[in-house]
Image 1 (cartoon, rainbow, N blue to C red):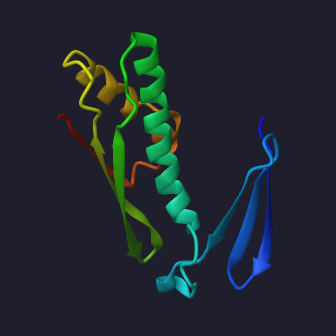
Image 2: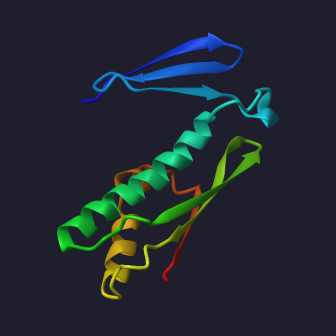
Length: 134
């Protein structure tokens, strides 16, 4: 079990603290929802959680196989719906490290799709993955 503490700082800002490490992050409401967009929004964190989880489990798989994943990059595009206001779509594009062998492709793509955050996302959210292999 992990404990995360959060405090409301006013002006639609929060500060969140990861208790085990002491690491902190801030959130702000987005500009299109009365905020100033000065930090990640809560739905940005959802998007970030998905992408970083996918990269982390791919990193574990790559390490276990002796493949070098370092240098892999990811761009996430989040689309919101307005009624109800929620994340409607997440498009993730992975630019895979050029040093990865051809045999790694299907395995790493399968690993990404099975990450814990992906398994926790509501099926109404359209998640689109694209892998660009050098």
